[in-house]
Length: 452
Image (tube, rainbow, N blue to C red; front, side, top):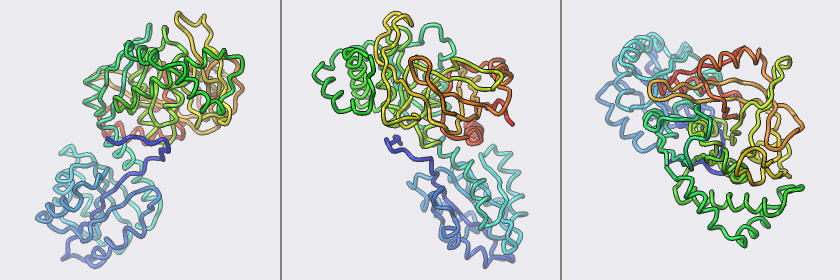
């Protein structure tokens, strides 16, 4: 299982590369040189490259190539014909490796006949339903590698999500039908395992944290927070919840989780969720397991933590919206991370509301809003891209002001008519294209709203 470290970085796919060749055709000498050239021209900052050391010319060589890449934890295979190649050997190799394939048609004149040989292989790959992406470009052109990166990152995301353990503490939050989920469909599609922790266990774990332990933890972490008027006992309850969540995360080896905080536990887990998100443990609100799946996925793609939220206010004239939740915003996404504010959650919000909420706004950055909805046969993923801009918070909680370069009202109408949910996993960067590639590999319908 690939866990996400607290210092998670942008997803860097591992790519196995094989040069194919027909040794009796012109360009065979260039093909023989390619395995040595590829590591030198590959942008190692965005890829981890492993090149098979000699041209692949006949299907009898497949077992040797498979052994070479065995246990290398590859995300995708890239086949690069160095010259004309008998087309049947490419699908046979891709099938044996069993990974999404990138097929690179070199535009360099030295690669004699490489493109035509590769084009012949595309039809059987398509007819056999094998996942692949065909690109054309020059060997030393960074644009060629950038095109491959989108698909390779999607393949990496698909592989690295498998085995992820997502804890559920509670059941569906009251009144939120759109956060319901089909556990077997999520496991079948994404490879994630839902771990039923239960709300009772969460509460008992909170109660098992002594006041002395909470006081000691608060002394260590208090320098990073401005408690404002928040009563000390309210802060300590948030600290106890944080420590309880950390204990459960460790005991269950969780990479993501959600708590049924609405209504009876509103405010209590906010501090702990904010810290967990900073650590690379995706923490969604209100029992939103599909939201936790998307937060974890977007965290892997972006290399940054994510923010779980919904539109609290919308300015249709400005095409902007205030995305808000009680307090899961992580410090690394905060506009002013040195001193995160704390406020007691207003008790009128609901019965049982008690705890300190994170008082912070999101930093200025490009963002992508994503949502996952549906069950087996209807799973669907959507995205919108915008810009988080500076904003002064007007109410308790965490928020981001996002401006969109399109008619937001129309986009939200389409969003609703497509049956998408009210929660958004906000990711740093414009990553909708990678999400689209990922969804195609998963077989999940994808739609980007408000494309410009």
